[in-house]
Length: 588
Figure (spheres, rainbow, N blue to C red):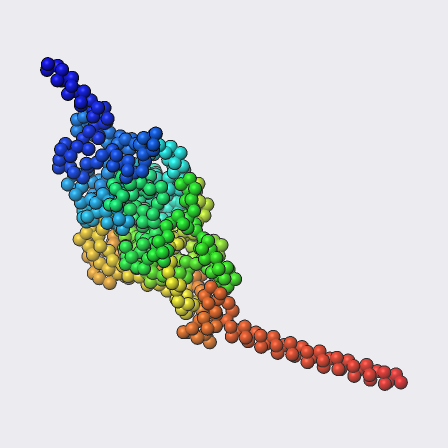
């Protein structure tokens, strides 16, 4: 009798066991008591993800999360399970701790850093298709999960520009192929050590790599879009602009490159309280301007696809050698200076802590690209302390990425090598100038370019100790002057800096200057210009032409010359006629 009851019990239990230990536990509210946020049914997952296909079925838990669905113990079932990577603001090596889960909102609302309920503790959340050691996209995991159903798409992504950036190998040194705000990318540690004048451990190098890799995207960063209305397992083929920009509210992806480094992003109000790009307010997605195929998204976009009339007018005007953004982008946010100096970076002592000064610059500086076209940039003073190598000053140069891009509109100028600090010498310094491509709005005033022929820009900024020394706070300002002699950047602090920290945080105090030669002058107004109404003489901005009064004066002069010509012609004809008559009279 007992044997029969045992067989019956096993018979009832086996179907559940055969299904999966994942569903056996996570569909059972009794077994999941105390872990209600992890209760979900297989049918609910399929409904939310839209991945179920009639006749084919849908993915099972282990297809995406791995683990061991045949083991019914807690430890055994979770063996090899993929999980979130939670990154702390103070420790980039934060271990998984369930006490942090209540601080995380699993849903995204598309806003900056809103996924975290306590942003001071948790910096961001990374999804499970990444390496746990350096946070880079893990192609092997992607193939084992997404690649089961989407093998071609995973292969396509791997060869795309975003996929190629997954291991950050383009800038193996601070100086090669060109200086860059991101610093070096960990490719060859021995090369970095050769450049440095102080010891640099493998742990310190890996920390820097993790900090950078957080922003480089993976499959889930784009297509996984948990939403309160659509569910925790919602995926989307299309990608919203907020996903490209914030990683769905996790503060990663393009917000770093566009808002902080370049200075003019898309959802600017979310980050620095500036006016959004006009296209964001019109609810345009990134992919409506940046065309794509097989995960290869074009870097450039053409305004003329929508603004054909304006582009045609501009091409015929005296502003034909300006890009649209040269006029239609104004305030620039983000980094106003970046120094790599000794400090406690994410609680780890390192000679290469990245110290950023955040603020707003009032107007861009315009430079000519390699084709002679004026483009807007945000000049950022950069310096690296504790260096062994020497760099000679250069003029404006444009960065290229061997094997990826032969040229770009992103530029730099090396200002030289300095040994004027009381310690941490030598110092290499340069000016970083990436092209600005977003932040479109109303056009700049004519005076902002043409008042004197000399470009001027002003920025205010502050240092708040993020990731480095939270005991220090000070503010400052920068002036950029660009004229026919070159570009000159002047920094000064407007609040007190502890003198023992000034070497790392204010190297300008010790004579380091960010100046380089070149011609950045812009044609100034004529002395008889009406300062208040440029369009009175120049027509509308896109149709800007030779001034109307000059056209009228030219017409008047042409008329006078024509009349003079007619008068001279008539006079000459009369003179020749008289001469002929005189000759005939003499012959008679």
